[in-house]
Length: 403
Image (cartoon, one colour):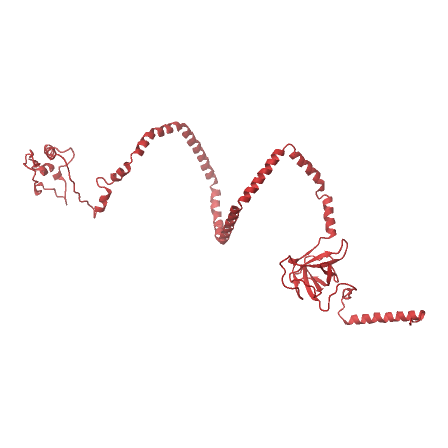
């Protein structure tokens, strides 16, 4: 087996070969798009396969993630980070990754920036969505949005929060708070228990009124929508309210004086009622028998109906065809006594009342009693007869004529 020569000549030959190789590498890289050390592939790393897919992920914060960092799924390397740049919105970070095509991931996969250990490197972890929500398949050109990305809390943030807590963040006040709570609760256990029971009842009552509360909130929502529709009308009303408020401000003294007068009137009215209270009660007691008897008079309403149209009943209204009534009356009684009374008093009418024959009839004319036919009532002396015809000249007596 040939081992080659050993000695100063051999070492010089190896140095020359190394320099030639380095120069060749520099020349080769100079002809391409070499942008830095990140373009040189690192030894080892994930197996990307012959045709990896390119996936972009949006993060709000990538911490100190750098290119060539690993991409893992179920803690197994499946790709690497190729590029980290600012997203189009100028606010978020966009990470470009190469992922092995053979890895079966859904199109709505999740992504997190994690840390391999307490002080280890950062890497991107891909996760399956919640069970039953997987959709499609992750393909080249897919972008995972911010809504499906997150990052872990760093140890620096934990230590910073712990430092704030220990250095005036509230720990020093815990002792004071505990002591004050003990002072408040000592000797008041029953009241605290009652308070808790009342709070429990209140919560139970609110829980039982959830439907009513929901309806009230829905009604309030509808009211808000209505007010929003009438926003311009309400704004105009508020604008028009300003002049009225100015008038009220100008009349403030008069309003105050009116309210003071009402106060005095109220005091006088209360004093009057207090002093006349017994008299008022006595008057009501005096009205009690009258009201009781009025309540018993069941025919009174019907009698009052006839009062306004006396002597005609309500049914007589249908007989009115113009501005007059046709009246037919039948008088039952002792005809001899009636005629005798009329004959005795025919020449002596009541004071102030005219005789019937002097009453105006039509167009200023007086009624002529001679034009009336005599009724067959018997002799004219008013003696009458057995057949009821003893009122010879009844109309003559009624009309005030002589015998």
